[in-house]
Image (cartoon, rainbow, N blue to C red; front, side, top):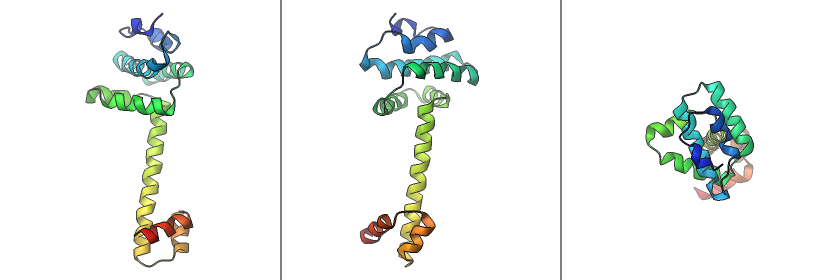
Length: 144
């Protein structure tokens, strides 16, 4: 059956099986987005939502570029629906949050390293304190 026939259902089994229904390669992101919207509409408890999501992701795992496309599409939904989707248990959201946290930490280390350079501390000390690469700090020193 085509997945489109089931997007208005409130049946958790049908929602989970969306990942196994007929869809083309270029519909993968759309199927995942509709799946997430359905989970939100059904207002399942977190354990059930996680179980259904785990089944879904077993059969329809998006590539990195598809995940990015999905996030862009979710951000285009109305604010309330988008925030509810982002609260759902999803491995790609958790990975994105972790990646964002790591990026923020690295940026903060870079700012601290620049301040330490301004204060005249040696690259060796800065590398030891911030755990940044010596070469990276040297590039910062030359670029400021």
